[in-house]
Image (tube, rainbow, N blue to C red):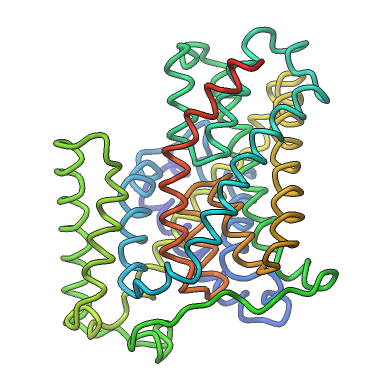
Length: 380
């Protein structure tokens, strides 16, 4: 088993899955799914076959990808963003995101009364409900904030089981949100996308740009340097999330002529996003949920129904208001999976205009999630 956990082997497999996904995504069959969805599915299969490590036997490589690769990929993608995008797409997304946050809270409360998880989980059920509300509003930061307040991380098996269920539900919801636009357009015709103008660089499709050595040198330096600066600022101002600082640096740089002339930032950022999504797939560990037996089934039913209810509310109300299915899918993903996966969706849908708004609502979710999590614990 040591061979399968060797970081070089695992990294090679992740890179191979990205290559396979991109090629399959170009076929007639693969175009129905897209490379982002395929890379999640491929690595999920390998992880559940125990050919690469999963969540229960995670390796430092995975932590490094979450810690460094995911934020830096956002930085690179933001180098293609024009600030005018927030004017057209920002306010609708923020409104939908607040709706999605409310839908998450309602989904948890309704699911609580339908599934009755307290009959299996006891008093821990209320804390888990708060943790799930937090994480399905803005990501895992809120999950851990609620857990730490009640010392829930000390309940080893139950805490690990809740994380396993969260990983499975989050991965499944990524698959759902990636499919939402294609599926819903068949039944409910959408309006024109709420798009904005982009900078001159984007007018010539950035995904078609070949990267040259000069651009590569500068991009690698800027990505590492910006990450370091955001980390230093976070030490002095811990109340400001480092990802917000990193995003701000990327947005400001994107408005300069020098950065606009660099080639390949989109492709480099998108490749790193695929690597991040590959790890997301690896974390979808079905065996960890099955080992919990009744507790695992209860947790999976409770969390799954809550997220499904969230999705139904967001799709129905969002459909009545906008019917921009890609924007609705991205907003829902920002709630359930956080800003990074929402950006991955924006890139998969080729919606450059929604990358910056996805960052903004992802940050809003981090700020809002813990409050809603504690509110649910109080209500229950």
